[in-house]
Length: 189
Image (cartoon, rainbow, N blue to C red):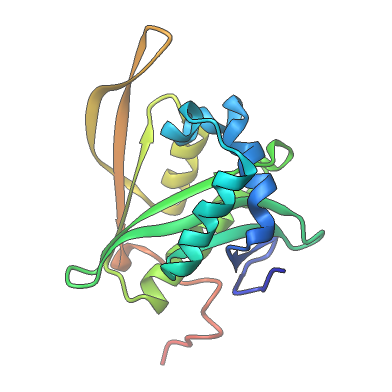
C-alpha cells in the first residue's frame, strides 16, 4: 500500500513498501537501469534479498521513498536520503527511475525536487550531496536542472569494459533551493 507523503504535479513519494520488492529487484537486475546506479548492477538481486533490504529501511526508519505516477498510481522508481548528519545538517540523495517508459519525461526532476523540499523544509538539512558517474548524462542533466553544482571528481574511479569514468560529486545548499511543492504547507510570512 502506498501513501501520498510528498505530492508533485506528475508523481508523488510514498514511504517504501514491502510490496515494491518485485519491481525493485527487476530494476536492479536490468543492466540498463542498474549500471548508472553503481554497484547494484554487479550483485544479482532476488526478491527475497530485496525484501530484506526494504525491511531494513523500514526498521531503521530511514528516509526511503517509492516514486509513483499520480495519473496511474504505478510504481516507477525509488529515492532516498541517507548518511544523515544532524550536527552538520547534511545528507546524501539517491534516486532511480526504474521504469524506462518514464525516462526523459520529468519524473526524475520532480522526484528530486520533492526529496529536496523534504530534506530542507522537514528534516532541516542545510546541504544535500550526491555522486554519479560521468557516463550518466541523464542524471547529470537532471541534477543540474534542479540546481546541484559540481564540487569535485574522483578521476577514473569507475571501469566498465576497459573504459574509465569519473565519479562526479555534486551538492546543493538550502539557500540555493526554492520551495515550490510544499509552499502551501509552509507559507512564507
